[in-house]
Amino acid sequence: MSPNNEFDFYIVLRHNILAGDNDLSWYDYLYNLFGSDHRFAVSVRPVNNWGGQNVNDLSLLNGENKIDLTKIHEDYLKQIGMKYDSSEDLLFGRICYAAFPNGYIIRADGKIEKCSVALNHPQNLVGYIDPDNGVVIDNTKNKLWSYSELKSECYICPDILSCLNLQCRRYALVDKQDCYCHRATYKPKSNHRTSPM
Image: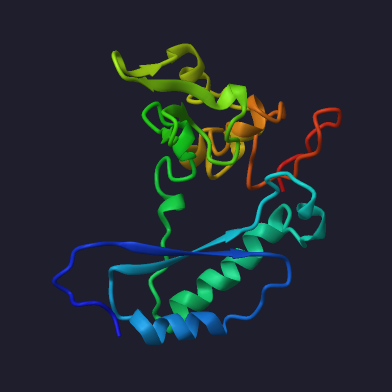
């Protein structure tokens, strides 16, 4: 049973999937709980490689497989009438929150960072809260998170206006890779990036 309609909110339940995640029955359960309530939606995203040793034990989706399996989940949600959050398909929808000039993470110690996956990395620290001067931002470092040159592949990509090559600036600024693209598979910088699928 969903909450009383008098409350105005919008909740997106994010479902992260791996290769082989073909069990769609969870969506039936969600639909029975609040499928007719427009304030609830489901977002399906592939699990990505954010580093660390444990990632080697995961069956990550790559290239077009990311799109294909995600589409199977999306189609099923639509089939049963569950609202699917498609904000990524909107203009600038795939741009990471850290790429927006005013997108910040305020840490408990007053440090101001950009990316929640690169906490405590020097490139991620863009400012701090000072008791006397208030919010202090290093504008030079902050701008690096909001600018990325378009690659030649970007110009033929159907997602160019939702991404603008700003889907994950951590790849360039912290991991020192060219960029992150959900349509391509990336290898370490010593190798060339594969072409978009």
